[in-house]
Image (cartoon, rainbow, N blue to C red; front, side, top):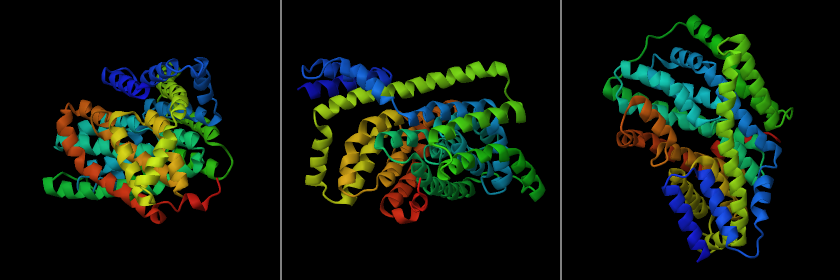
Amino acid sequence: MTGLLLVLLFAVLLIIGLPIAFVIAVTAYAGIAMLDTIPMTTVVQRMFSGLDSFILLAVPLFILAANIMNQGKISDMLIKFAVSLVGHIKGGLAQANIVVSMFFGGISGASTADTAGVGKILIPNMLREKYSKETSVAVTAASSTMGMIIPPSIPMVIYGSIANVSVGKMFMAGIIPGLAIGIAQMIYVNFVAKKHGYPSHQRMKVAEILKEGLKSLPPLLTPIIILGGIVGGIVTPTEAAVIACIYAFILSFFFYRTIKIKDLMPILYDTLKLSSLTLFALAAASALGRLISYYNLPVVIGNFFTQYMPYKWMFIIAVILLFLLIGMILDTVPAIILFVPIVLPTALNLGVDPIHIGVVIMMCLAIGLVTPPYGLCLLLASQIAKLQIGKSFRAVLPYIGIILVVILLVAFVPGVFMWLPTMFDI
């Protein structure tokens, strides 16, 4: 009965619009208050211990690096370079939208930053070139999901901390699946552009492409510096995030001169606001995790899978369906914090690689960014284009299908997609 009441409390608080971090905290507090066996001080102790991890410092630092890049107009340069590369292909601006999302995902590590930064520029330009609102929104929102998969990825840092696996290996494992999604989307956009007669730009000369490439080279080196430092054993992910912040500031303040000292306070404020929500959700989920362990939920779930889904392929399908559903109603970070500890023990018992299942989970949750009712990337893109969310969702369905196909390939043909992290001892 207590468990049922807590589930109802969680659902009601979520429905009335209370921020998810507070929903988790209130549920944890109420649940522990109902028990005589667990002291109330456990809530505070668990919240502090949940944040007592050096690797979690990477979260606000990567957010800060992304905010500096956004404020520094780095996205403008990446867009120009992307257009110079693929603008001549049919549906050139839509193709550039996808390419710049690959670039931006490797710099910011955040899908919503991609949608906001790139969408504000490309969606109006696409509309001026007679692209439909539906296509403009769908391409922008769907391609932004690669920010969760292509390294560096903030959700992957959270997963690495929760699952106690190498963040560097998670980063490496996300490269090929992320590129596969991007290439598949570009192929589909080419088909759509031919069907609707979307325009292409004039092919640029090699010298012009090189010129735009040189302008964009410094920010494009960001993921190489981060991954190179981690893979080479020179820095930890947290130290790499520090380097990313310093590098982003040097580029924006000294090299491009697109931000000033007065811009730093708003940047820091936005970073603290977003980081505090993320980390408070993590702290609250740690307290809720104590309650979940009291009820032996991981054991119950493990027994369920053992009894009804004894084979690895059944378990993987169940995990895909679970996180697709969760991603529709929860933000990425709380979803990882709450549900990964529940399914991970069973994955390990069945011999599933935690890096492999981690990438599959990240991709499933990425779809949640473009599916209502949560669908934050879809909501942002719809607001920019002033398009109803229902029409936006219908337009993005083919792109969701593309991501689902890649998820199934990664899940069941891991040798093709997951060989990169095995090459490095990180």
